[in-house]
Image (cartoon, rainbow, N blue to C red; front, side, top):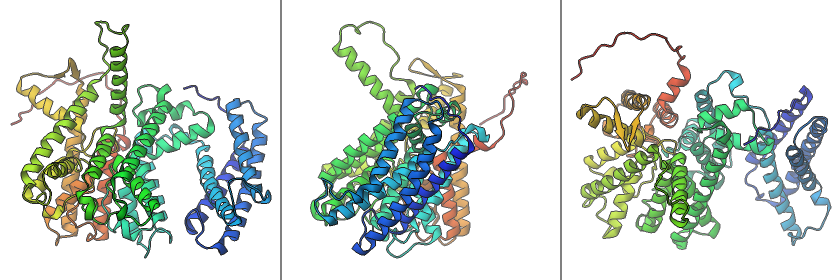
Length: 594
């Protein structure tokens, strides 16, 4: 991806950009305070129109002045054309009410309310555009990429909390600690809730939660960087270098190609999932078609991002949804796909293209077999499939006469499959979790601890870490000093990172259980341990104690969710000062173990 030439601008230009950002932010705040896109009362329409027209007029003239400064500089035609299109569109929206006749509006009522909807949508787009053109300069702030990654989550936590505290977000209001808990749970794609998402929050509040889930699942820097690239036509080398580290891109030149690929896969999968959910649910369970559509979109986003949030009071274990096996299979396919990780999905797609090309064409039928399906994808996919298969058999065996007793035939196997896959950070439940046997609870905790695949939307120690641990044990049993699989040797650095992740995860879980048992001594230790492991694995499953936690215990759970989403090892790498590489090595000594 070619980098756009850097534009040298004076201080007045930057001031104008910040003024535009402040104006668009004012418009977004006004929109949040006064409700949805379409006004609920006709009396409020004209006042909202006057406010937004005045706001956008100021925004237009400041932007026009900034554009006049750009005309004096040398920049690409692509950048110029975007500015022109953007300003023409803005002017059109401002003068639209004076034109009187618009083809797609048939009555004055539709015209006025449609215009308000368009203006509010434009205000949101303007805010995103204004925020995106601000130079971030990640590396110039002497912050390593892991710190930026962690801080971006912290910012969204509080922004989400204030949005959820808006009057239009809830029916009866919500405290700051509960709003912050919900925001952290959504951004960390966990799914633990202190209030009922379906009944406590309005459609606007649920939309905020859905947006937080989407941002948290993909990462705020993914969105911010892509919109910055979209509106600016390029990015600095420094920003691309930081983003390549955050998004695990192999080449700096492929950073934005990777971002486009991630966003493209997300949109396609979520749209397909939402469509399938829409036709799989019973229309009688919804009052209107748009309520059914919102339900489908919400659960598609929540499933793909492995969040586990649901607008149903009892999650999937609610009424007829508990026996809607088609709906459950769609959720399974969506959150398993989201939990695989974008690098694995990309590699699988690349391998399928190679296989199809080799099968169809004759020119590629040579004896040479390129290494397309890499070792990372093989290990993670095999481990994930093995966990799903073993987990389904164990859950069926343990719960067939307990929580699965209400189901028959294939339905019982589908519910067992659901319960084998959802603990690995998805967070939906289609059984009464409090009625599970102790052995099933322990099995669920194990799956929550393992989690999803690396670079996916889930948490836990990751399937690759589990695979390396098992392979290392077998290698030591065979007397080998290295791990070899599929004609490849696992690097010593990967082994060290895997065991560091395991040690740190056990430490976090232990400290979390210890802290909550001290703060909430009346709660059963079994339920506390389940809650902590669920928070660390960003699974979102609970035995019913989340809402009963005090504010101090909620803060502990929030901290664990944050660590589980970002990674304790990432935080240590970010905040511990690096030592310089030494040119010497001390003599080696063996330590007695076992």
